[in-house]
Length: 160
Image 1 (cartoon, one colour):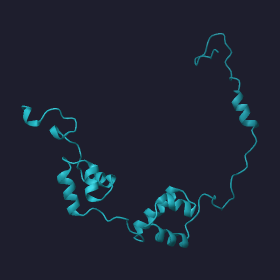
Image 2 (cartoon, one colour):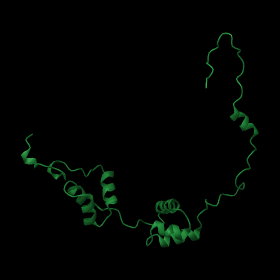
Image 3 (tube, helix red, strand yellow):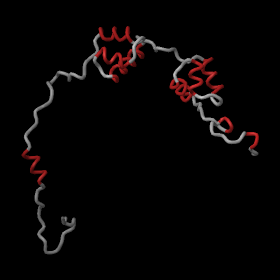
Image 4 (tube, helix red, strand yellow):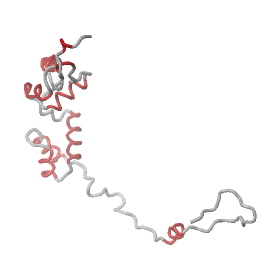
């Protein structure tokens, strides 16, 4: 299909181009009805009631988020968002206390010799808790030299 050049050509009529069929289709399309009821929120956006908050406070320490989704008939992100809000307000507390200074010192001291999994098992914490806490403080678990798991030669054999 040939297209017209953007510049005027000698001997050719210059006038408006014919309408595209899509433009004609748009003008003949019927108007859509408005969705939903004005002033009423959709069913998937429900406010939390005080009874649901009280029940969430009671069930949070002993249940996981997937279990709570079945109980409350809400999505996982909705439950997590409400838990974060209640945590920030001080209504509920975290399931495990944050790492204390002794645990942090243990992590910092052993980060080059042990893996994240070994340190997590030693402290009784999750691997994500161990990794995120040290990364947040600027420490890494990278192993160098003979501490690296694929090192072929000992450090004392390599001359600097």
